[in-house]
Length: 198
Image 1 (cartoon, rainbow, N blue to C red):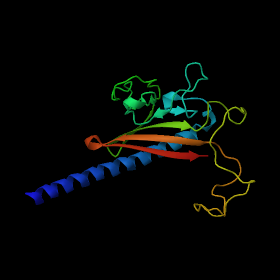
Image 2 (cartoon, helix red, strand yellow):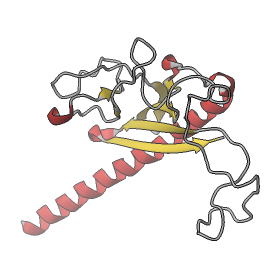
Image 3 (cartoon, rainbow, N blue to C red):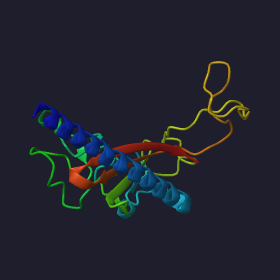
Image 4 (cartoon, one colour):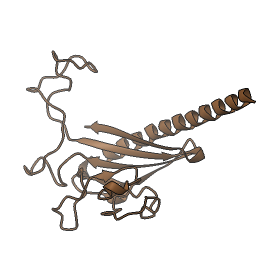
């Protein structure tokens, strides 16, 4: 009896791991869709495009356009002790699946990446800047960007050490944070984050 139960448990665990790996693979494909969207819309990334799941700053601004709202909780599973975070409306249902409590808003919308390997994938993109606008002309906007070293490029790619600069020099745009949620079989949920720049 113990052997049968052990085999059943092992099979269940392997199945769950397989579903998780499948969901994570689908998340990678959704992140690639988000990168393609960023590339195709590079001329209009200074303002929020909420209907496409894109936000031009790390923190959503309040209605006055100046006041920064609290940080974003990407999982939507708000803890009672920290109910002052913004939630992402992954399902388009005003965050009905979130735990009870008072929230500052469920205003962050997502883009549908569609069905990938029978998984449902959605993504949201944040430009890692202090506020929306053109960071090249507005000095009050600070953005996270790759470091540059007097315009010199690194000869080795992928290697990071103290002797050589780890990033290519010269000018480059800010970083973008892509958050993907994938729902798969047996209520499998996978969240991934990808940081890119162009």
